[in-house]
Amino acid sequence: MVTDLNELKEDLTRRMDGALETLRREFAGLRSGRANPALLEPVRVEAYGSEVPLAQVGTVGAPEPRMLTVQVWDRSLVGAVERAIRDSGLGLNPGSDGQLVRVPIPQLTGERRQELFKAASRYAEGAKIAVRGVRRDGMDQTKALEKKGTISQDDEKRWAEEVQKLTDQYIRRIDESLAEKDKEIKQV
Image (tube, rainbow, N blue to C red; front, side):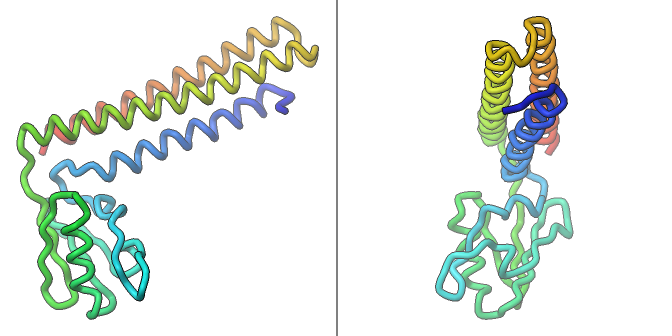
């Protein structure tokens, strides 16, 4: 159990940072029409008898704004890498050139942009829910400490205000991240 405000804030900050980091990873996986190596992070390749992340069989790069490349280390896996990217559900159609797999990023349609923004909004709402859950835990901890007599009612109110300020700060950061992603989606 937390016994001082700094310890509480540290714990809550760490947990809220986790929610924000998860949101950033989810946003990176949304194809905005611009080449970003993070787009291929969820892709798993059938290699050596098991499914492994794409990053374990090759190097992903973005040499041009509308092109990703995967430099496959083992020539025998080029076909498996192409298949994995094609079957990933990202709407990408790779082609190989020796050990290099080229992945052109198609232009986004207006309808696809709306779908991407809706998905980004869902991810942002999920992050907000996670942050609010952390806030609820923080509030519960302060109330429990006040009931035990560890802190006074005034301290409990002050701690609750600090927890709320921290929550508001993270909700603002989530909204800013969503606005940036929306701008990125509309720009391309």
